[in-house]
Amino acid sequence: MLQLIVDWLAYSVLKLNPSSKLGAAINFFIYDSVKIMLLLFVLIAVIGFLRSFLSQQKVKEWITQTKGWGNLFASLFGAITPFCSCSSIPLFISFLDAGIPLGVTFSFLITSPLINEYLVVLMLGFFGWKITLAYVISGMSIGIIAGIILGKMRLEKYIEKDIVVKDEEEVCEVKPKGIKQRIIFGINEAKCIVKKLWIWVLIGVGLGALIHNYVPQAAVQSIVSKTGVFSVPIATLIGVPMYGSCAAIVPIAVVLFQKGFPLGTALAFMMAVAALSLPEAIMLRRAMKLKLIIIFFGITTLGIIFTGYLFNLLQRILV
Image (tube, rainbow, N blue to C red):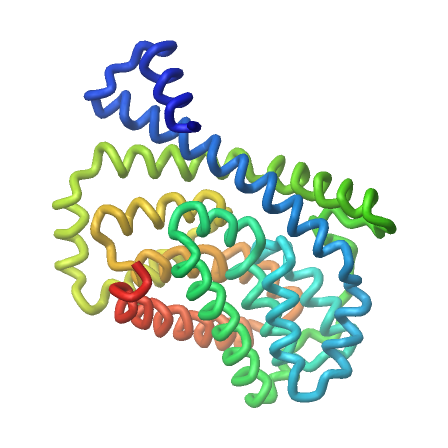
């Protein structure tokens, strides 16, 4: 139904030529933009309603008291919070201030940008449930395993001693009570997140439309063939210095995949952009010394590269 409406708008109202690259690109842009906005709003409202039953203070207590399970709980909490890499840092610092072990806090910090509600919604819309589920499991595994490794390395000496926790969380946070208030909370959170993401959605879908309609598939496959077995680490390293919302990166990753990029290579690029960025490193400098930032980025990068190769191996099963 949506495709029929978009076709009518593009070809009957706007009088675009359906056989031209421009007409196809604009049709692609309108359809995917509307689909993503609707998916984001509806599913984030539902997830926000469910998330309203969780208290951040209670989560902190659970993570602190659960011996041996702290990394898992921290990773789970990171997966259900709508944070990008930079906006998850204040909560990471508050965990440190609360005395939660460093390795456990890293599990949250790594998982939070890799998996969040709007990224999962986008991936469901573009990749389907099998790839999305595998991505969620792999993202949490990276957070848990990297957090455990970092915790075993006893790196507490590299934490800055004068950390000051500030109220910088970019979340629409209230304390709803009752079903009606929780529904309103979910709707308000959906409005809040979509309001922040809409421009990134349009940018990502716009770039995806251009790649989809103007970049020949042979050119993409030629690039992949030249990089060969090194396509995953190259894609990861290219993604590290970049910074952007997952709302912009997911549409680009799916178009690259459709054009011939291996699944793991496309997802490794997306993971690197989401979880590792220069703005994040700059913000983390206030909480930790440079050596710890380098170790953190290094271990997370290796985890993403390993996951990329794993997805490439499993591509036939997942697609």
